[in-house]
Image (cartoon, rainbow, N blue to C red; front, side, top):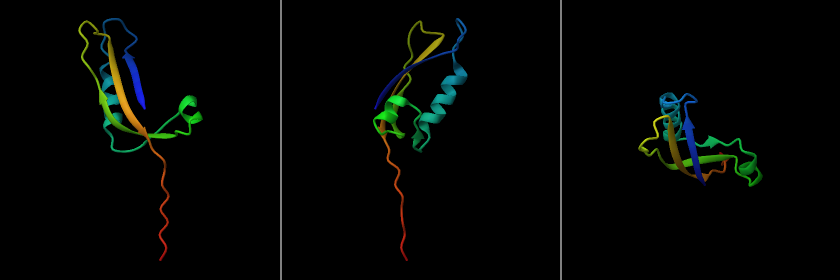
Length: 83
């Protein structure tokens, strides 16, 4: 799954520092993320695992931060232990 997004602060000439920090924290977490997207849910995708992400520095793009995310769909596995 390829995701492209653009974070903005909503205020001219203000970098979205807190949003970028929060996004980086979420993307670096070693857990599956629940998906709330009608498009992906329609394809049977309800959770994803982030493979990699890229937050490039863009010259002159002071009040915005682009981000590219690569993820894979994750199917929950229910383990049953019989003793």
